[in-house]
Amino acid sequence: MGILDKAKEIGGKVNESIATFSSDEVIANTVIKAVGKQEKINEILKNKGSNYRVADIELGMGIPPTVTFGLRRVKENIDSSDSFYAVEDVPSETEKLDNK
Image (cartoon, rainbow, N blue to C red):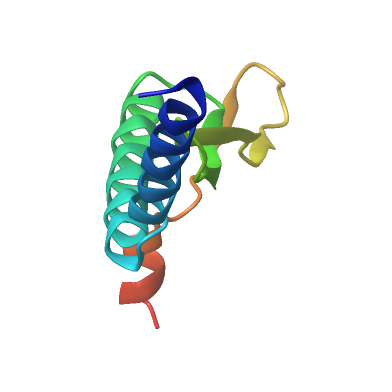
């Protein structure tokens, strides 16, 4: 097998991998897993008293596929003594759907 034949074979495998990564089923499963991870992380952040929540998810369907989480600061209510901050939670996607 010559070098050009080997390059064609590798190119074919790359094309096949890209088609597999971009299938609707794989994308849907990735979204479900990423949102589940987001909600778990947000619960941990809430329990630790953090003023931040994972608010954005970006999926990159390349080789390798990537999932990027974006953080946002949640709204704060400051009492008149300025001695503490009460964090107002952002509802999860599940809570948003339940309220509709």
